[in-house]
Length: 102
Image 1 (cartoon, helix red, strand yellow):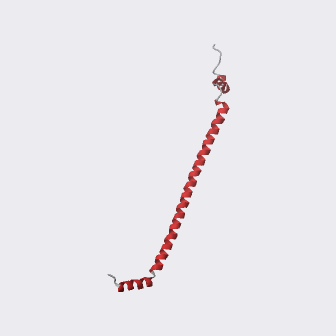
Image 2: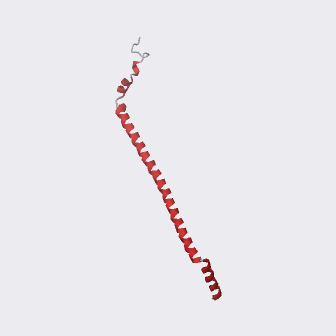
Image 3: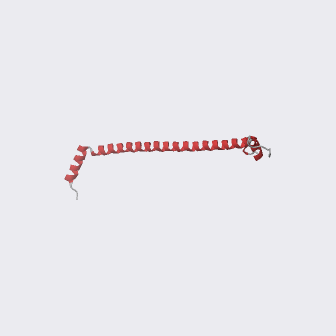
């Protein structure tokens, strides 16, 4: 059931209220808002990734420092025989310990 009077009324109101132009304007504004939201989420993701990369770099540096310390500690006596280390510490040169059994 077509009602020509209602169709004419709708067309006249749509023309007077500029419905088509308003819909197009709203679509453009929504597209801009969508692009801005996508840009913001990309920035947040980038910052999060950068923080994660720095954490990984810091862990690698920490691991290298520990490894270098272990190597340095070994080269400064950790691989020497026990007697050599005892002689070096000179724990038997104290006055209260003597070899006199008298």
